[in-house]
Image (tube, rainbow, N blue to C red; front, side, top):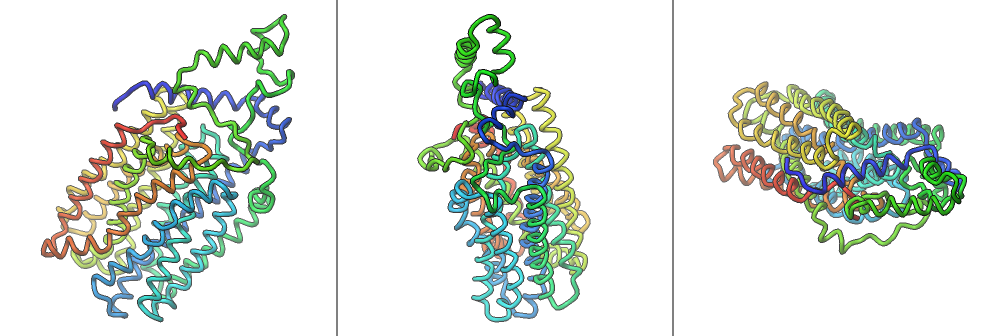
Length: 503
């Protein structure tokens, strides 16, 4: 992979972040009123967020499955089916920027709780809306997209501010892997739910209610309720928020500074040590130092002008766009393709869940490897992000090229499973890169990137139907186009990506 001076900045960033996690940082936090979250609460945060994303993805998958029976009963045309499958994306894309901005200003866990409650209600109401009228169904799907649009920005902000850097690749991999497991559950359970099809929406809507109840119980047990009820408490697992040593009393000065200053005035020696350390940092290293914004202070105005010209963020946007082009196309049309082109029966569509299982397992494995490479300094943070993203985009591109050659459902599912396995690497690539380039605005940067990445969701339904119709029923142009998009987006990401704080 290409390397440049920014890779050394990535390693320097890791060193800087690790230095904040010693005992003196904890003492500093206690003196300044910071409550450092323990490992049990970090696990609770990651677990609840992972379950929320699992529901988030599962609720999206049930419509393509249920739509097969709904279309037959309600008499939809293929274009109407395309609009139903894409309606969710219209609401989703409209709130990406607002949800990112809000997640930087409100307690992210409270925002996540409200989002799950809202989209679960929309899921349960989908059946009634479909029976009422076609416009009512479209409106319900759009509303569901609006509610789910707050999920991932809230989770990204939660992880950036509460999960230490040494755990982030695994945290993002677990969260995104759980999303794949949610897709697995949706594709596995939905075809097995007995008729009528309305029961599917009631079942998954009820799962969201169960998450809310579990969330409240765990929140009380692990003090996560501070995020919901008492935002004035400064609870943080990200020790980057702990003030630097030069702002503390003399008793909290680092041990190495005292050793170098043995016999001299402690305060003066510590000041000199800080000055010497700062003078040895490069510009990129200084840019990558953790933000010292207090957790209880109001969020600063988001740097909108910087967002528009930020090349590392543009790199993330392109990579996310490429991945979602493939994901929306496959998740929306794979059941229809297997049923109508390869003749798979409806109950057999449960096997389309296998690619998502492969994605979840591979994502968590890649996350562990990525964190180990960074911790052992075998690779810089930037090299890990670029390599993981390249594997996660170019691997599926190859699978897209050969997919039309599959003549049986088993072969097609095997190819898609390989695509999803390789695509899981992006959880440790551009997805985790949000936390590298920004601490205070990770939710907003994700909102910006996901706005662009949702555009394929708007196009996947009607554009795929139009391409197939114009090609006389052939699907090759659909998959080859997806492969080309992935290649272009990989090149852009490798050229423009960075792994130090720029916002």
